[in-house]
Length: 285
Image (cartoon, rainbow, N blue to C red; front, top):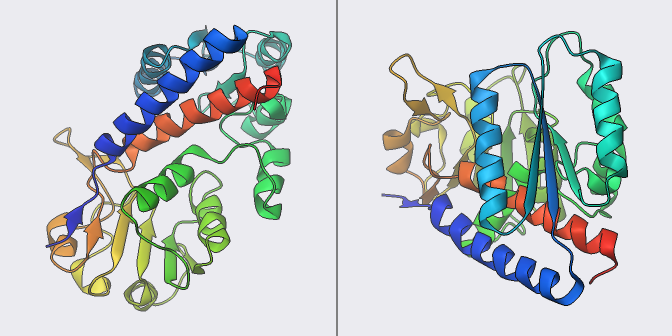
């Protein structure tokens, strides 16, 4: 049976380190990292995510601000809020919770965020920096996955890596980070032919599609590392990943559960990015 990668334990350890570094920044320079989250509308899932982010920020010693806006907010109104946060020196990190209502252009809003405060790493300047290998922040979920691999001493170098999913949030940056770690990377998506064959080649398989049971046991190379990023709420209320967990667990060497695998790392890396942003903006090392 595969070793289960415990994202909660790794995230807890990292958060203790972030909290210690935050106290050091406060005591040495009087800088309290500030994180602002903007949420538009009343989507219940989005509000849960935002509450979790605020709670995590406060637990490590950050200042946390949540700006809630009504469902009918206009582009001009939302951009004005972002511009205000850009100018607020007490705020070092800004994120706008996605998805946005249909009248709002998320790409334009992301471009409005000061790249130095873009702790989601979605701004074109930051995504371009990742492609070039010169960056201050990494997208939170892919960065969290790389941290999990390091925590379990799983080397990427020279290994066949397959990423299923090509989103701008996970799939594409995940492929770039694996490539930067000297993996040989294949990206698969909804138009890929013979998905099973690509998956069976993978030493490291990352699935980020949101389709329960997509990755079956017979699609996995014996001894592969399987990272499940999918999160789908089933009719019974339970969360499901992309993998048929029991099947894949009998074949893989390592596997992430859902929940408790990648999820806890995403907010942890957001905290880390905010701490980095506070250091950079204050001139600290």
